[in-house]
Structure formats: C-alpha cells, structure tokens
Image: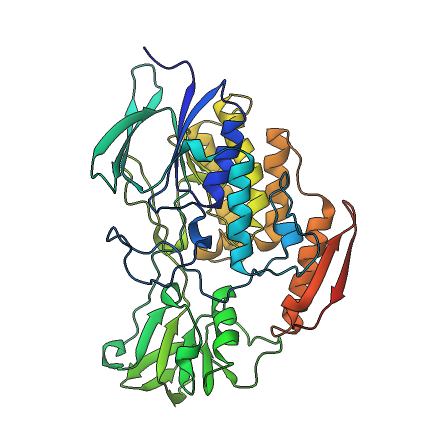
Length: 433
C-alpha cells in the first residue's frame, strides 16, 4: 500500500540537514523522514578531526574545520531563530566546539536522533516519473558497518551534503617542481607546523585571511596572493605581504602576475570548494562547474524536479537562520501552500536575474555569493512561506561586523554584541585574554 505520508530523505546531518529535519519532525502526521549521515556523528563541517585524508571507512574526511577556528559571525545573530544559545554572556565569536555542542543540543531538544541513520552512505538518488507525472525518488544507501545495501522510495529529497570537502585546486604551471609542503585549506589544522617558514597562501576570502592571520603568528613571512581588484586595506599582521596571483612556480621560486618573485617554503591553497553530488542519477541535469549550480530556482529548488532541494548553495550569508527559512519554504512547496511557476517560467525568471547580475559585473562564480543581496532573499522566501523573516537588528549587527573587519582583521573578533530588541543592539570591545 502506498504511504499516506510524504516520505522525505535528507542527505547529510550537518546544520542544514538538522534544521530541515526539525521542521519535518514537527509535522509527523504529514511526513515520514530518514536523515542519512555518512559519518558516525551529526554536525557536518563543525565536527573537528585531526585527520585530513580518509576516515575509518576509507571515505574522504568531510570536515575542513581547523583546530583553533572561531566563528566569523557573532553567535547572537548566528543562532537558529527558535533555539538561541544558552550562554548569553561570553564572547560573540566562539570556538567551533561551542557550535558543535549547540547543534547536539538542538538535535536533542527537537528529538531528531531517532530519524538519523549514522554511518550510512547514500550511493544513488534516482528519479522515477510515474504516468500521472508525479516523481518518486529511489534512494540507494549502504550501511558502512554491515556493508548491506538498501533502496527505499521517497517523495522528496533534500540535499544537505555540504560543499567543504572537495577543494578546488587551480593548476599553476610548474607546481609539480615545488618540493615544499603543499595543501588545500581543507587539510589545514594547526599553525605551529609553519614556525619560521615562508608561506604563500593563495586566496584572500574568509578562510584565506583567517588562516593567514593565524599562521602569521608562527611563520617568518606570509605572502597572501590574490587577484582581488584592489589591495585589502584592513589592518593585517606586519609579516603578511599582499601579492598578486601566482603566475608560475619553479622549484621554491614563486613568480606572481606582477612579475615579482619570492622564495617559498610552504604553500596553502585557500581557493574554495567544488559543489559535488556524486550519488545523483544522470537523469537529473546538474551543472556544478565554475562554483555555480544550475538549474536551481531560488538557490533551492531543482527546476525540472521540484521535489528535489539543494541546501547550502548561497555563500556570504548568515547560514543557520537562512536554513530555518529555507526549510519552511520547502515544506510550503510540499504541502502545496506555495505554488511554483512552471519549469519554463522558472528558467525564464532565473535567466533574467542571471543576466542582470552578469550585466552588473558580477562573475558567474560569484552569483551565489549573496552578501548585500541576502536580505532581500530572506525576505522574499519568508513572505512567500508566510513565516517570520529576519528582524532589522540582524542586518545592523552584520553591517557592524563587516565595518570592523574592513578596518582591522586582527581585532574584529574581539567585539561583543548583545541584541536588545528587534531593532537595536549594543557592542563593546573586549581585549582577548
């Protein structure tokens, strides 16, 4: 007998997967749920491990978390809206272990653990279109402990498998001649191994700057190489020198695009990550090249298969609260409270938006970096889903964080923020211990 409940499969037990599960579990009269997690614990990228290569099941280490990482967003606005942090005092930019404990508390509070299959690898997700036009999903998964393989049928699939596992490594002529230590930021864990070294870090986004600042406390010299249109003006450590992109490498000599050369002992790629969905059937069109995923409507819904959802695509956002809104938008679609345009209309709407962004000079690979566009995105989804959006104070705090970061990379995480109400916040500067 067909199930009267809508059967949902969630792939991945990180923050996005847990948030979707929380909203599904609140409606167990309507839904049944399995959340698949390939590791032995929930938390996704927030689960720290010293390992950098393969796990005990010979799978790639999922997390890119490094040992000393602190959040780059204050916990006061990072919290999932219906589950604030218990410690309202203390620092705003917290160590990753605090976030991990927070997520475990979230899962316990909303009773998510009974619906999680740990040590379970999703191997294939295959659509099956019925005669009436409805799509079912055949999800094949393997227990990594017993090696047994099972296929179950679902009505909807939510992909929350993250994208901080497969590092993007651009080819640099001569890299094979470099004999120093060479890693992607995915493998970076501790700064002490760079003591007394000359280190080139390629990439000056969040992780590149964060790692450069940390390694600079031990290294003799950091060359922060990037192709940003202009130099970073924020205060950085005295032993960090900005350079243009790496043009070529010969042995330990790095040549930059401005023609200058330096001798380098160690090299770290902070060049971002690939979006990968290795389990997805070839029947489902997905383009993931150039740090860009298509054809996805509202950064969330596959335009041809509207019961297939992609979490975690937008960057430069406040992710936990965004997932909270996205999850409710997804359920609005499944419950037919939200009427999507036709596949053709979605594509036309998307292409118009994409052309507008490209015409503004935004590169294709930066379209998912919402930053200033994030607020309109949240408001749009929340309005359509008929749920609470972000109160104005969230943007005000985030604007202050960016302002302080743009002034001084070395101190912006020393500020403490307190939310007063939906409009107002207080901030104080606290010297680190």
